[in-house]
Image (tube, rainbow, N blue to C red; front, side, top):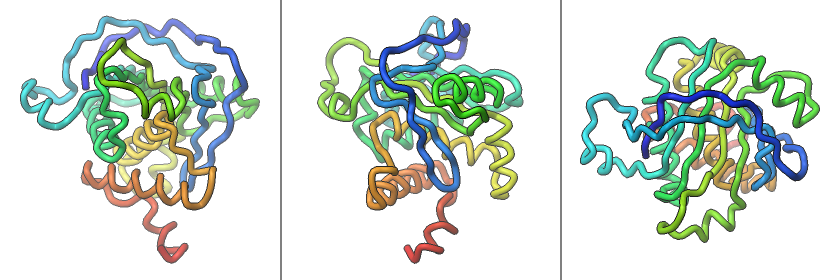
Length: 235
């Protein structure tokens, strides 16, 4: 996995197809576009630096961690100064561990840390929901296409994930968890949506996706975010 640290936002690339559908997942709300419909995606331009997010990490150590997918990270105000690239990389590597289809060297994904106002605009314009949400996820591949994707070939864009700072910070405070932990959860959740997982199909699909998220976060040393929910459901 490589990290591109310098980007310029060009604006919104309009796609062809239906408007993104809403995804509801306790305790967060995630909006996802239908696979292959890049509605509202932010275009991030920059030379791929190939710089790993873990400071001082050698190529050998990085490879040993199993990070393969390229991750383009862009951080905007009002996200405070912090090791957000490192957090994003840890979350993405963990997502690859629980969903091996993401560990394809041809794949790349963009991750935007942005504001409620930016997410609000996307939510309003493409989902007709005039309010911010915590995460927007825009898949560019159908799940079947991802599963059939050979490791050799031209680059493929998996999709885009964007996090809204104010909503994420408020939710973290309400849960009594660090913002970093909640952001990691949302990144994992968003990447799994890009991989085609969908907790709205059935309760079984919801449980399976939550189990993947919990396992990925455990790899990051983060407690089960669904602990209270699962306890209340007797699981």
